[in-house]
Image (cartoon, rainbow over all chains, first blue to last red; front, top):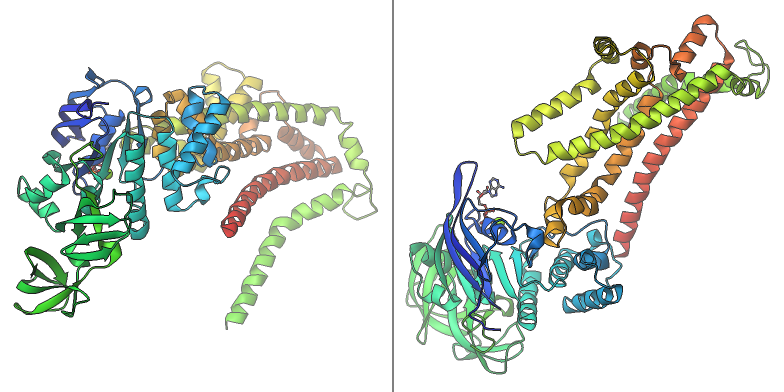
Length: 354
Length: 267
Ligand SMILES: Nc1ncnc2c1ncn2[C@@H]1O[C@H](COP(=O)(O)OP(=O)(O)O)[C@@H](O)[C@H]1O
Ligand SMILES: [Mg+2]
């Protein structure tokens, strides 16, 4: 139960494929109940790192420790870790129930317990009543949930997720982000999550691990990463969003920049202090009326397809991207729609309360 | 313009079907002819009755069926195992080489297969007979199984096997529980193809049979002496059996598609 207990430790992990070094010395600790996200551009070695934790790839050098024991050569089927694969990888010849029951049947769980645990898990991922459906006829989001249930039903110490929401459309992705976070907190399992979407990383994680070209660039809380990027790479990869502090009054109502906003998130404590992420391209320039948050344009740079500007509202500098030119000094309103407001728990890793 | 073209293509298809099926149709009709000549004298089961009292034909039919059964089962096991093995090989050049070599028996003339197998057996001081027949049938059936299983493996989501390991399967168990069900349709298709290939093979059998009588060899020797309507009856039966096998394979896949579509509609 100790939240600082290390579950996994990666020590100086290196791995080459076809003579090309993909991982160049990865050092990473993963703690109990932590939501860790590996964040980085495509091809930087996130999946390979995850596969090393799962046991599908053996590192060339370095050690993988599980609860302090070296497990470099332990095969995947002997690790108390389960994976949600990028392309779901559900078993097409089995129905939803049997997919989820797969791991339980392997260890000869009594039938009664199987039924109970599978039902429980399907309820957790909102798929009750789907037991006898064929998996290849489910929607992408539903398949994703089955994959999560199939992994979680085995009560793993650690759940590995490789871009689990990559194939879903924006709205669904948003919903699933919230749901995944809820599941992680209610079960108290360690999640190691891979994504190339910085906003997803910032809003879901306790700890973000920024990677580039086979090296870890920075490890820290979303706030650390955003506010104090350790190097130019992190700054340019992360620093594009607006992050502003706010208060979550109740489900779907958040206050920031002195105004109340409708949003799509829920599941926070009443009046919980939170951080809000808004992408610059999601902020829309509107007339300077009382309907919107208002500010003054401080600078404008043409970036080829769009203008990037800074708009000062009270003491916060908003980064805004727009295809329309607005002169410096103009008074403008900022329109932010509910789906574009991303809400982060203001916690350090592991804690429900921070 | 387009109408004319459509008509033309209709005529073309009709002609093609005529050329393909007229001989078989004539054969089937005359297998029920009551006299020996090629003029219709009335319906009868006479030739079928004679066929089933012909010891030689029954004996060679039995040989053919036994050989087809052994050869198709053996080549299914070998071909499927080879496909899985080659598929999971890491060396890409070797992989390509093996695929090409396996393709050779499918594209090379049967007579080459027959003669080379005959030479092989005489080198090995093996006289033609039952064993050499089975071995040679296996050798030309394996590629057809191999090439019907391989696409199924390629279509399979690469993470399925890993997902099974992840959930606690040992590698052999993961194969049995996840990979095998995925490639089963390919294995069944391959098996049926191997069975029909073996059943109607003449050329390779002719070179390797020694003094074992298979159905095709018996028919050949009977035709050489005199044309007997019994052969028509036998060919009709063979045609119907092969047609059945084909129908079963096709209906199976069509049914699956339909079921899928139906379920899609419901959702
Ligand atoms: N099994 C493999 N064989 C050869 N190259 C691989 C293999 N797995 C990954 N790679 C290479 O390693 C690099 C990093 O891959 P990956 O870890 O999947 O990156 P990411 O998940 O961050 O996009 C890629 O260039 C990829 O081509
Ligand atoms: Mg990846």
